[in-house]
Structures are given as structure tokens and as C-alpha cells.
Length: 319
Image 1 (tube, rainbow, N blue to C red):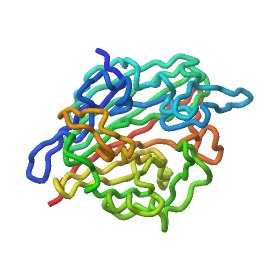
Image 2: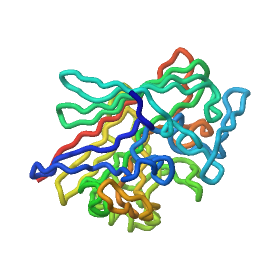
Image 3: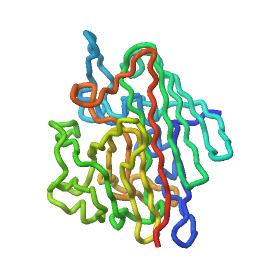
């Protein structure tokens, strides 16, 4: 069995009254996942987020990647993992059920060095959890940064925008970016800025703050755990339905994208146009452009090592 993009297409979650709704955005026309809805729900790589000018160095070698937006590499390049056919098999245990996916990315793929073997599991648990686990091995040093790019609306896909949601992000610093969304300097404290989401805040109120410029598409720096265990990164809550999604991860960062660029071009599964703010992406990750930022946590995977990352979405309801 194969699946394109190792993609999360739908997720049905009950509200406070027990009524389920699909909370994941996906296009009505699957063909749009190759164009205007390319990253909806997909597993992105070999490097999630951006690499400036699609260029980085390892040792004495400089590598040039395929580029798109503004001449930079985004989510692995022009033909990233979201476009690939992944091998898939079902998984069933007493506690979890879901799918195990595998992809081989050859040496030189989009300009990246080394043959990379990637395994991703997407499992639903008995405790109302959805868990993504990523693993990879390589035969040559290469940057690796994998995530899932689902958009969520806890009032239900096609119900409108997420401005009535509340968001909290457990981060004391964020990554400022330039006009091309490339990191423009050191990580800065969120205190006193539009990026201070350490306490739950209505998204409409957050986006109205000076400096938010009407939307987020920024990396938030999480407090690391020395033991590599899961830690809470963010909480998304829809007061209208009571649905609450807690994001736990082993990753050092989370990209918050409030979908401000949606323009109604994509029709959702329900036939409703996806306009600005129709959903929000909470992408657990290493930091953007880390291969060119030596002070950031390294994303370089070496032969003999294993890349591992885990993110869990925990669903609850409020009264």
C-alpha cells in the first residue's frame, strides 16, 4: 500500500456534548495537494521550514538545494517528501492503531547529501491521543528536520476561522524573521511583544497586537529537556465547542502559522472556501535555517546515528 505525502487527511474529535467533527483541513479536490494545497496535512522534509538561499555547508563542502519561495528552500525543496509515494502498512496493538510509513530519499535528493531512510508512524491511542513518531538513518552527514503540516480548526473543518480560539505557547523566546521569513537575528524574548503567548490568549486579540502584522508564521523556542522526554509546547482551545488540543513534543521549537495567506482559492472537504485564518498549523520542529546558524541546536544527522522525534496531540474537552 502507498500514500502520497504521508498525509493526515481527517481527524474526528467529539465536542463537550459528545458530537464529533472533523478538525483537520483538507482540500475537496485531492489534486490540489500538488499545487495550492500542497502542504495540507503532509509530512514535510528532508528539512521542514526554510533554508536561506537553499544553501549550506558541511565541513569543506557546500550544497545547493532546489529552491522556491524567494529563492529559498522550503519544506525540503521543489519535490519534497510531501510529493512522494510512501510505503504504508497498518499497525494494531492493544493501545494504539494507525499506520507505519517508510520512504527512501536517495543521495542528492533535492541537493541533500546521503541516502536517507525515513520511518514515520501515525497512531491513535485509547487516551484520545494522536502520536507522530519519526526516525531516520543516513550513510552520509545530512541535515534532517521532519514534521507534520496539518491545519486544525477545533470548531470543525469548514466552520469558519479560528479567531475565536485561544492559544498558549510555552516559549520564552521566538525567532524574528525578515520579509522572506528567513531568521534575521538572534532569538528574542517574547516578553512585551506580540509573541508572548505564555498564557492562553484569544487568537483575534493576539493578532491585533502591534508587531503581529495580522498573522503568525514564526518559530517559537521551547525550553529544552535534558532527558529528551515529551514536554508541552502549545495548547489550542475552542471555547465554542470545548475541544482542547495539547501539543507535546521532543522537539526544541514549534512553528505557529495562522494561515493569513489563505485566500479562498482552496475549497475544503465540506465545500467551504478556506479563507484567511481557516485553520492554524502548529509544526513541531528544529529551528528554521539551522544549517546556517551554528548557535542553534544541530540538525545534522551522522552515519551510525538515528534521528528520532516524537509529537503527541492530546485531545480533551472543557465544560
